[in-house]
Image 1 (cartoon, protein in one colour):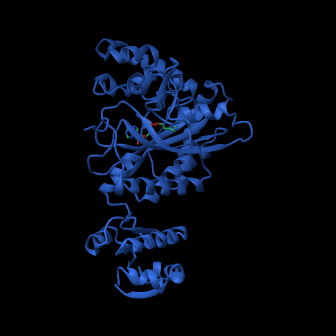
Image 2 (tube, rainbow, N blue to C red):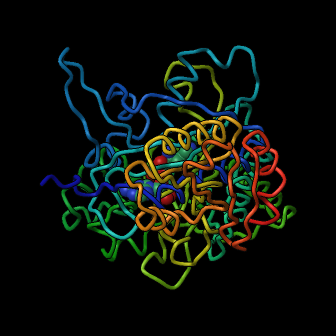
Image 3 (cartoon, protein in one colour):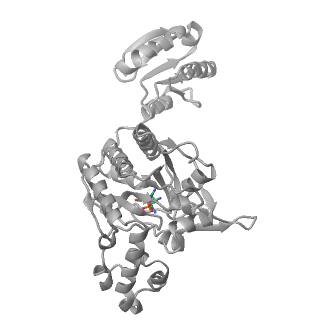
Length: 424
Ligand code: HAM
């Protein structure tokens, strides 16, 4: 017997319906904000992720599913959505005819992480990316769109944490302050951090192995290294958030695990009191240098990703899904072979008129056919035998009220249209 790969999931029945429900609610909300779907490949040239997330990020250094194809190219299953969207935006010169371009995507991402509650190796992310001139209004509108999605799904217990990691000059001066701070502790830091110290000292703050190292707690905050412009920008973002009544908490430890961010960064943290506490339901930020560093124009982008798997798990826990059973409108039971042939025709007629119809394919006895009725719980049923098939008159039974009505075949559609929602 084969088993699924560790850290992956099968979605079927109720959970598959929950997945699609989430997709529908989310895409309904996001399309009101003017986002359009973008579908990019599940794998890209490895370089796309290395250049964007950064060599020293956990994603690139430890978590990528990278392989050589038969043409000896190094390819990687996407660990996140931003890099592929940026690659596509530039490759297709989408910047040429629009000043602002807003995309959303939903699809599988792959990270070789240690599986645990809400953490998988193949997981699904809904994400958005907006490309256009830098403005705090856009930053806040992006954050509001995520907030609206949580609201539409009914998820409370979410805290918006926000920070600024500054522009390029703020980051450069912060990197040198950090190096000065960690220099006397270099011997006691983990080997990864020793490397990060030279290559990208900001990543030290993100280290899981050294998270309890005393020097971590006393590390200088990026807030003190922000340039005048970066600070003014951040203050504006906060002011607009307040005007929009979006509650937030400034978390000055928030640096994010990917290298491409500049200025505004944020996470939506689950605060419920269960095993998912403190998990990020979504996270993102602005990236001013990613588009130009991929060879595009000097335009920033901003976006976020949301963990669909986590959101499903939390909504299940909190009982936030509506009933999602797929009840058919009609189930046809039939007593002999010719009646089954007739039932199949009737079912086809119903389906092409937009009603869902099912029938038992195997049995002529009623007992097992009623089992099907029990399982599917349709709005209406009909038993088709010789009499019905010859007279083309069907006794339609309302499965809830148990009322029976004799309906001629040619009137069946009209009968259902009239009675389906009111009586079933
Ligand atoms: P990220 O913080 O790496 O950002 O991931 C975003 C969200 O994906 C997380 O907050 C979490 O909900 C979900 N997630 C991440 N890893 C896993 C996992 N192993 N299992 C389940 N869920 C997971 C990004 O990916 C950026 N691309 C977001 C972004 C878009 N920034 C700008 N634009």
